[in-house]
Length: 162
Image (cartoon, rainbow, N blue to C red; front, side, top):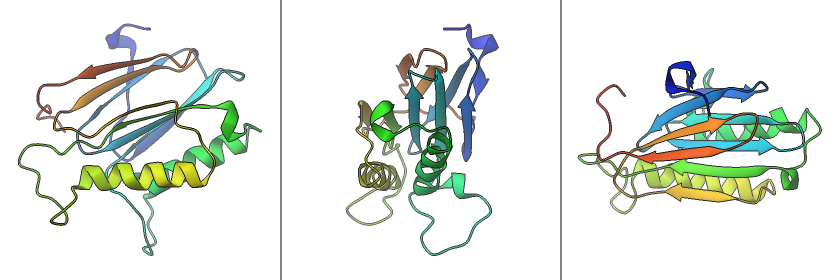
């Protein structure tokens, strides 16, 4: 992996298709990150969703939503001729952060983000290779776009910068 100083930071409501040897990282709390890697093409897609579902709303920022992020990656890889079974798919995040109210009495935004993400991935035929979701702590995820190697750092608390 490249040094952190050379890494690209993926911010909330952003996505990137890495087609060059580069390292991308993102910091997650209740947000969800989906990573799809094609070993054959040596490219990686990564997203950072804040909220669960676009629903019926029309929006100019679909990458803000978990379902919009999954559809973005699906379309990006499908347009390159990559089938779901050819990809390694990882899902990270969805924590219930301290002092974060539950959206409903029984489920937090982080839990909803994970539920929507996993449901749509399965509906579209993507096998989940790795999943690290839930809990109460943040995560910092690094991905090497050429190799698909993922490095996960669990954070004791979510940094104030997000």
